[in-house]
Length: 218
Ligand SMILES: Cc1cc2nc3c(=O)[nH]c(=O)nc-3n(C[C@H](O)[C@H](O)[C@H](O)COP(=O)(O)O)c2cc1C
Image 1 (cartoon, rainbow, N blue to C red):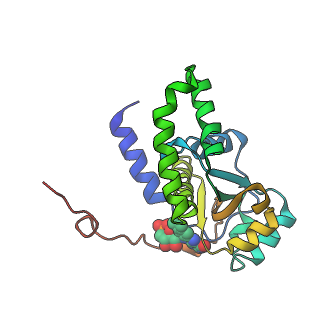
Image 2 (spheres, rainbow, N blue to C red):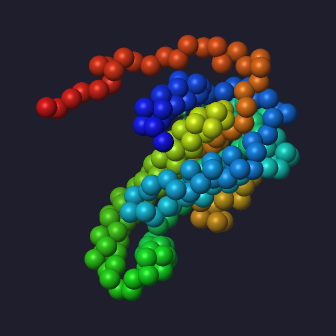
Image 3 (cartoon, rainbow, N blue to C red):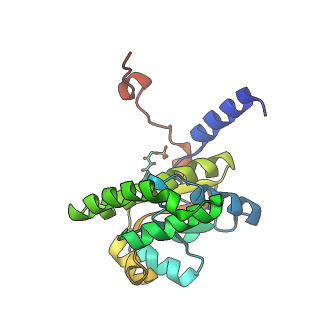
């Protein structure tokens, strides 16, 4: 594919997207598109590749209504075609690290023992963070990388999104029964198609100029 076209397409998709407030509840994301968006989440990079997340796609209307009550009553929670809650692992221990490394060994068809030095690095890093109580802050950051991938992928497909931090994570956790599974809610994202009467669609995008956000070290 022509690199110039890809550049133009990416720039225009990023200008096109905005945090959608009102979705057209009649329009649903097609299965092929949804598969691509799931892939964008699943393929997101994460520290050491540990993927300490779970993405909960909430289809149930009653559950989405309950979640809305704990999300500033934002209509996106129920009007959008799809709602994903991005949750992070509340702990990462050596058992989990080994579980992941076993997958690496299997996928790459190598003996797991060859990963011992890598394992040592990860375990030391994780133990340090655990000792200072920062494991969850770290896993949380990983979920935001996945959120970023999702927003960009959706924009390229001209699928609207609204990232949602205006939520009560504790209430989401309780409704989705996440603590029992070892996860906690970090952020959510509504996806679908903008409603014709979403006033926010007409808002000019507000971004600082290049010089205000870039410094160059030469
Ligand atoms: C992590 C995150 C959380 C957000 N939470 C909400 C939210 O709860 N409700 C909402 O309407 N917009 C939310 N937004 C949208 C921002 O307000 C919006 O991205 C910002 O104002 C820039 O506008 P634009 O995305 O339309 O270009 C959130 C954005 C991010 C990145």
